[in-house]
Amino acid sequence: MTPNSVTSEHAPAPVGPYSHACATPSGLVYLSGQTPIDPATNELVTGGITEQTARVFRNLEHVLEAAGCGFRDVVKVNVYLVDMNDFAEMNAVYATYFDGRFPARTTVAVAGLPLGARVEIEMQALQP
Image: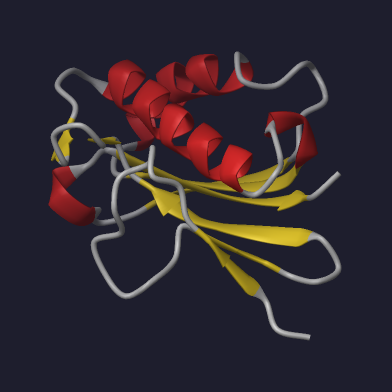
């Protein structure tokens, strides 16, 4: 049973040797972390943590769709913040992407993220 790579033409191209996601034959989908890169420009979006978090979620949404999933199928989220002072603003954007059934989540502070991003988010989902 080999996992299948998942890619989305609407998400930013990976900046290294990895897939947007991998789906297992049992239906578990592991999404690689997304940063706030605008796929149209391949550059970080301008603005603060609110704008960056919203772009990350749009990128994740494209990958979820490519895997046949949506936010309702997400079971675990890992959030990486460069500054924990951004937690409340990130959390406000985060909450708008789920219908009240929130997945398990971990949020940690990191020393830095690719291209100077302030946030990176990865997910695991179950294909319906």
